[in-house]
Image (cartoon, one colour):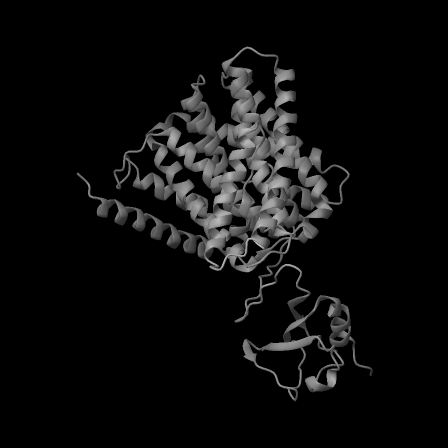
Length: 488
């Protein structure tokens, strides 16, 4: 009998290997999703790990909980002012685009591979959502950036298209398992799930921000416990009342991330780390659930459906949804190609297994194989496609400084960084002569990868990054003072 100590050591080793796999992903440009899945398969009963795991219910339960946390973290990390200009097109891609993708794949499976029409549409719905995180991890490893509007569109689309895929999957399983009018059933379910998910997600997100700002906990470490439990509560309540819980937690996170609340930076870091842990757990469990020997019979069908998905379904959906938009032809082609599949399709593939849908085992293995194919072919080719289309931009990273500033509710002060232009009139001037507003303190200067604690006599140089604590109303005046060019 295996002892609890051996189980804990095994879990710890797998998680540590996953962290190293993530590092390898960053260094070599291999999508982390692929490495996590491979680790799970190696740990499984047909790999050297020898761990037998065949529990679709547990895999689905863990996957749903993990996905709720991942979507909440994605919402919290989304800057609404950045995505608002492309929000309409993103929502079209995450709704109409998902439906088009599902339809093209589903009809192909029906006409070519012997599925019934509903079974084909179910398969198409399961693999219709995308995973932008995999895209950005590949680009980050190659120090490649994307045009801002393309990046923001992909971020918002990937965060908002999972609920639509979940809705279509659940709806089609219901139609397969009972006699119902497809149009009426789908319409009623869509309106109910999306409306309740959006409304309750907004309300509960607002309530969560209010509680965090007013509860006044003496121990800062309890705030992550509060938000951690709130995510499950929001998902559970919305799902209980018939809404789309995934849409609800994403909207709650989006609302929270664009509001001011106490301990915001520490909570954002906590949920970012939690999202990574949930991704690792989700991928490992799904890797354990699959039996590699069962993938062999679906290789031919899987390759053909992968080709349809990548070369027909996704491009058709993108071109329809971005028709007459601000996106150029090259940008549209890039968006069409970078629609990587992630762990969500594999989670959704467990739904038919538990519901007893005909061909459920075949659907699960096909979905797993299609995800692997998408990651291998699309994921590894993304840097080449971006460069070939001439859309590669320098990758910008968030600056890290050795100090933090927590904004509280109603606080008018903030911490900002200002870059001194090389033609600024402030160059070579002592700080005391800048005549900055009274409620403005330069706390740190970053210069040539070094940090300088300034005094009144410190002279500024072009390219200096100033960290300034100031009143929010003074931002325009400080910007004008530091960026005004010197007269020739």
